Amino acid sequence: MHTSLLGLAYNIMMTKRRLTEQQARRIKAQRSHSNGEAVNDNEHGLVIARYGKQALIESRTGERLLCHLRPHLESPVAGDEVLWEPTENKGVVTALITRRNVLERPDLQGRLRPVAANIDLMLIVFAPEPAPQPALLDRYLVAAEHIDVEPVVILNKADLLVDTSQRDQLQHYAALGYRTLETHCNQADASDLHSLINGQTLVLVGQSGVGKSSLIQRLLPDASIRIGALSEVADKGRHTTTTAELFHLPEGARLIDSPGVRDFGLSHVTAGSVAQGFREFWPYLGQCRFRDCQHGDEPDCALQHAVTQGVISGERFQSYQQIVASLSQDD
Image 1 (cartoon, rainbow, N blue to C red):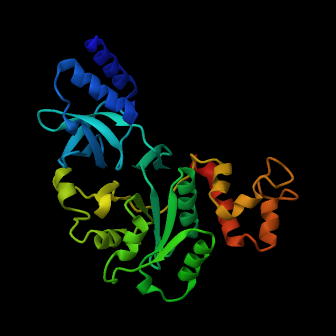
Image 2: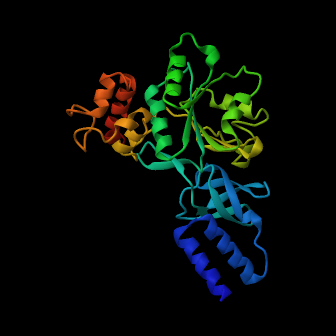
Image 3: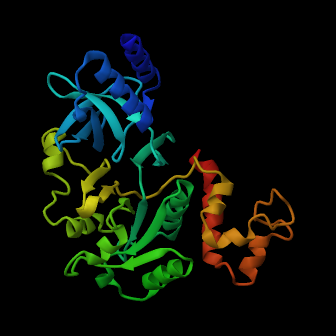
């Protein structure tokens, strides 16, 4: 009987390769009960980084090893919980435990790729240099809303400000109800960042060059950010800017650093979801004359009226229109 239960659990894992935490515990219990031996806790792992057809896994005992991925396994990324089995040389990931959420973006071929999983906060970083892209910031805000993650907008490199434009932009997001922070690398400690994190799992996003690595260095002064311990495990000094990495922070918090981008496609998001990603739109959605209003030139558009009245900023509404218009181009 126990053998048949084990076989059933194995078949489920082999065909679906995606388990809830409850299912994972049940399979472990069945394995342990069937052979009279306790299952090694190392079989449950946390994905630290993904490298092609391999993933750097951290076991419950803190051991880190590079594991191969079983064929047809749903693509694991930093932050994922997995089941893995030891092998002679390394290990193999056998199943992905169901995610609470996942941040995704299309690759250059338009295929949707996961970036990070099981996130509580999204820290969206911009800076005076390189010049901020408001549309990119708004795309991240839409993505955060889409996966039900709280966004925090951070103005980094504030010591390089030459005018008030970026600070005004930050204050505008604060007025919309987003948590915000102004910071720079010369601050004495990282207490401002730690107060935001509060033991949660966060993903750090932003265009290339905004200083995300310097923020990590403030949070973890002894961490090897790019070429170091992680890269050595992941094949002798491989450069790590092309993959997301997970770092452990004090008090159980986790930080996932994602690669810098020039753009962030939202082809997987509907126009309606884009509108939901603009908080100031919420009171007006569903108030237009036409149920299928595209918020363009239609008469009695509640959003257009709010823009005319100055309740919604013209810049944000234009950003919304640009994102919606780009959806077909992202496909």
